[in-house]
Length: 159
Image 1 (cartoon, rainbow, N blue to C red):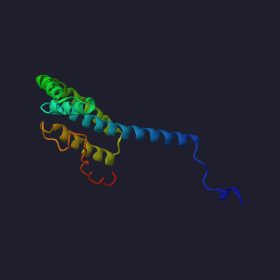
Image 2 (image 1 turned 120 degrees about the horizontal axis):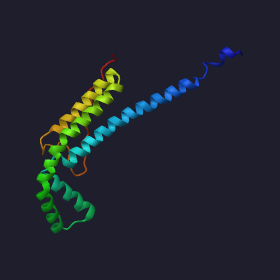
Image 3 (image 1 turned 120 degrees about the vertical axis):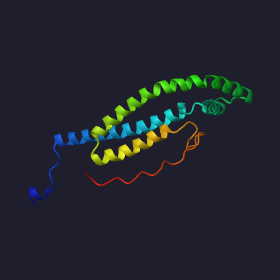
Image 4 (image 1 turned 90 degrees about the vertical axis):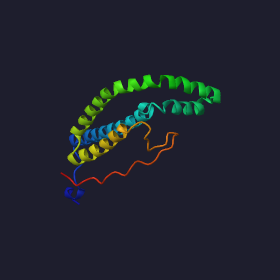
């Protein structure tokens, strides 16, 4: 057997480093997308619907702390008294949050391929529509249950 039958030569060190860097960049992009989705979800459930915030918080406290009915009633009254202030703070901060999210979205879009960017923009638009829903219009239950997300549209062919 001569040396030509040994198969292709192993990848060079430079090529292996480039593959590793590509893997890290892809992981960062995917992680950033997941993080943005999780942050939207948490933000939406924590402050978006100020009218239901006292009820949701008391429900969680009832489960976590074992509140009596009297304690739950008192805590809910305290939270309800502060609800308008929470809503005012949310309205004040929302433009700053939106501007920052838009900046993150633009930066992510710069590193994606055109097909990835189209898919990301569809997902991002869906999250923005969820965020823009009027208070009280929640498709998901708030007691820890989760409905499956709507199906993703198929990824379009390459550019």
